[in-house]
Length: 213
Ligand code: SAM
Image (cartoon, rainbow, N blue to C red; front, side, top):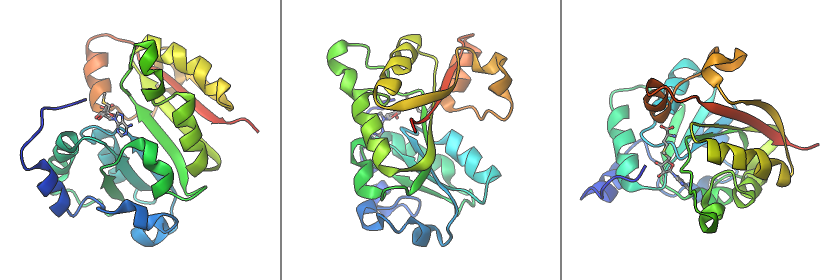
């Protein structure tokens, strides 16, 4: 998702009490930031943040961090969150390439990638969030048994990921080409894109990966 630039977005983000402004300063200290040692779960490319807001409201004993690199998109999440009492959710405006500057080794329990941009051209493959380059970043911050959970409607990106993720040294623990009609549908929390694409009748693919032991 890339919205047209919204004048004043950066200023509103800088003033927002939902956004951590210098997240690099919290590397290795997220338990202090949240005030507890609960697991830290992140969504990379959270868009307008519906998924994480729902998870944070239903799971007060889990800490959530939403990562979004575009100010105009993050601003939508900030606006949507207004009035919600969610002490277990922070937003960061960073590129996921910098995640290891923000989280220490083993500091993150789960990484969600939801409806990531497909980047269909071969020359843009490194930008895909399931590329070996990004899997190497996740490897630096995930705890030993931590998982990467990826959902998409894009069959090309999913097929690519089924190859790229094992090549990067990860085991695919679960995979489905039609999440909503699979045994894994129960408890599934829909993202904004998921709601839109499934209403159009598109099947949703999902995989869960863990580092190969
Ligand atoms: N996860 C949401 C959903 O499922 O409704 C939004 C999906 S949207 C297609 C993908 C989002 O990922 C966009 O908002 C985009 O700005 C963000 N994104 C893409 N690459 C990113 C990166 N390297 N770091 C942080 N955010 C990224």
